[in-house]
Length: 537
Image (cartoon, rainbow, N blue to C red):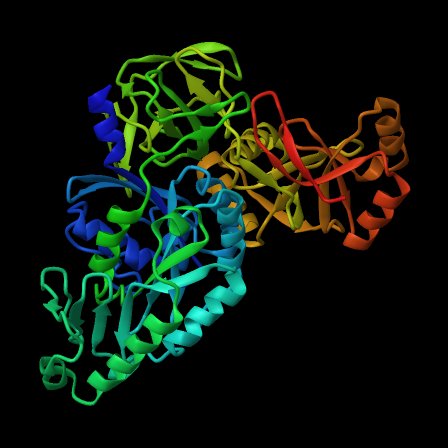
C-alpha cells in the first residue's frame, strides 16, 4: 500500500474555470507545454491558418472558437501527475461544467484583468462553494490595459465572497507592464513583449530596497515598493488551511498568451493544491488510500471518434488502484464489468492505460449502459454524492423534418440526455419532445449533433415554458391529484422522474402556495437509487 500512497500523493486533479474569453483555453495550452504534452500551442484566434486550440476538438467548437465540451488532459510536471479538466467556458455550457467540478480536488480560476469578475464566474464559484473547493486565482491579460490590481482584488472579494492573498504582484499594466514580483519566492520576473518566458529564470531580489531594482525599473521601482508595502500591511497573510478550506484564494498575475507568470502559478499549484482526498458516499466517506477500487462516472461523451461511433464514460477514480483487465461491479445495474480497454486523454489524443490511481480520470468504452452518476467498485455497493442535475432555464420543442427518422431521433436525444448536453422531457398527454437547457446555445449543439452523428434533420421552435421543477410528495394521492389538475404541464424526464413545467416564476410560486404538500426541486443529485434534492420552498 505504501507505493499506492506515494502515487496518490503526487497527483493533482484540478479544473480551470472562467467566464468566456478570459483566456482559459490559452492558459490550458501553456500548462500543457510545460508538461511536455504538446509541442506547439494552437493559436485560438488564427482561424485563417486553420490552427485551433488543441483542447477544442468538436467541429462546432472550431467554428465558433469556444469550448463546448470538457477536455480531460493528463501530463507530468516535476514528478507530479497532473489531471487537468478544461471545462466549458461558454455560459451556455454551465451544467457540464458544474458536473466536472464534482470530479476535481481543486480549481484554477481565470479572471480577465480588464473585466474583473463576470456572471459566469459567479455561477461556477457557487458550485465550488458547495464543496469548499480550494481555488487558486490567475489574473490574466496584464499586457493589456485593465483594472487596477487592488480594484480587481476588491471585485473578487466583494462578488465571490472569498479572501484574496496576492502571491505575485504586477509592475504596471498594458503598455507600462514590466513584469511581476513573486512575493512567495522573492523573485522579479521581467516581461519582454513578444518573448515567451518558458525557460528564463527570475531575478532574485531578496530586498526591495536593492538599488538594482531602480536600475531595471526606473520610477516604477518606487511604485512597486509602495504597492508591496501596502499589500503586506493590508492583505491577510497566506494560510494554507484557509486555502484548503476554500475561504482564501492565492492570487497570481500574468499573461497567458505571452506565457508570462504561468510557470510561477503552476509551481505554486503543485506545491499547495491538495492531493486526492476522501469522497462522500451515501453510506460513508471513502478514503483514497483504501485497498479496493472505486470510482464514479461524471461525464458521458458520444462520438469522440465518428469513424467508430464510440461513447466514452469519464470515470474519476476515488480509491484503490485500477489495473487493465480488472473487474468491478456496476452497481446501478448489478452486473460485473471488465475494464479491458480503459484510456487516458491528452486533448484529442488518447492511449490505453495499464494502471491508474485515485485522482486519475479514465475513459471506459460504453454501449449505452453507463449513465452519469453511476458508481463502480470491486466489492462494497457505494453511491457517491454530489453529482448534480439543474432545472433548465430555457425550453424548445423538437420538430422532426422526416417522420421516418423518429427512432433515430429518440436514440439521439436519449444519448445526448445521458451525456448531460440537454435535458429531454416528454409531456404525459402529448407525443412530443421538449428540450430543456441551462443555456440557449445548447439547442444549436443538439441540432448540430443530431444531424452529424445520428442522421436526424430536425429544428426547434419556441414553447411557452420558462420554468421547470421536479416534483415529489409523501402522499401519493395528493401527487396524483396535483398531476390531474395540471395534466397539460406534467412531463417525465429522461430518467422517468416527474417534472412540472410552467410559464413563469410567479405561476410556480402560486402553485407552491396552493399545494403545500408538494415538494418542488430546482436541483437534485444524481445517485443510483437514492435521490437527494434541494427544496426551494
